[in-house]
Amino acid sequence: MKILHVLLTRMPVPPLKYGGTERVVWALYKGQKELGHDVKFLTKHKSSHPDALLYNPKKTLEEQVEGWADIIHFHFLYEGDLRTPFICTTHNQQVTPASFPKNTVFLGKLHAERSGGKAYVYNGLYWGDYGEPNLTHSGNYIHFLANAKYKDKNLKDSVEVARKAKKSLHIIGSKRYCLKWRKNGKYKPYFYPGNDLNFYGMLGGDKKNEVIRNSQALIFPVLNYEAFGLAMIESLYLGCPVIGSHCGSLPEIITRDVGISTDSKSVMVDALNNIGQFSRERCHDYARETFNHLIMSRNYLYYYEQVLNGHALHDEAPAVAQNLLYDFSLKD
Image (cartoon, rainbow, N blue to C red; front, side, top):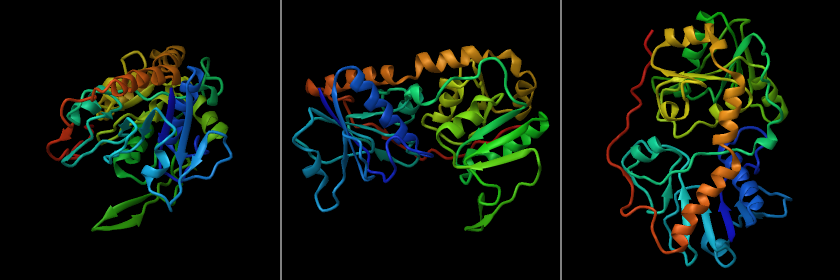
């Protein structure tokens, strides 16, 4: 099968630092190639990769994607007309009323249900890029992994929980002085003091993996309808249990043997104080076996076959019928 992935961002595939969707596209490329398919990807980032195609702004998208592939996989919501069969993956949770193309795939059962759909594939990653996990010991710290300028990623409660548990917090995704909160319609800089906080900014590759693999746990108290959360499976693969909120995909992804999802900060503190209850080897095995590039690739191939055989993935266009408000908060 000839498969074309389309992701119109200016970031490289795979990304050097931040770029979750790009990392997923790379894993799909690797997996589908391993399964014997001919795969290319189209982005706005210039690349020397032999299967990378560069988007040309002087041509229509339709002109650039028609003619080679048996199926086109858009990593955004495409609603145009094409002769070539296609599907779309939506990598975010729509929170205002909207409808989706009939051939949309979501990132999990809860993501699909919140969006009025049923077709979903869990994200997987190419674990060959992550090196060896640390399954025997860890440093005396936990880590936060998210773009911390977004308030719903909840660095504020992460710091509070870490301090109550007397754990140093290593923060990937923010510099100490660049975090900003919105106030009165404007942004203002926010500063977190304390020697127990280590800010790395945007990390990628070996440096990022090294911080994670030597951590005791990922603290992930998000306050939004997280569609999936790659930070969780990256951390699990490298041996870290996930201590997070009961929001978004956490109740679905985080099973009791690899972490907790709760709306209580005190429960999070207690879990961190008893982090030895979670097996680092079990965390690694769960991520490796459940969220890998080959399983994800095979699951998408199942949906490709449906579309190629003339069947829509949903009888009616999936839709978010009403506003999904970010009204979550954690209890003490």
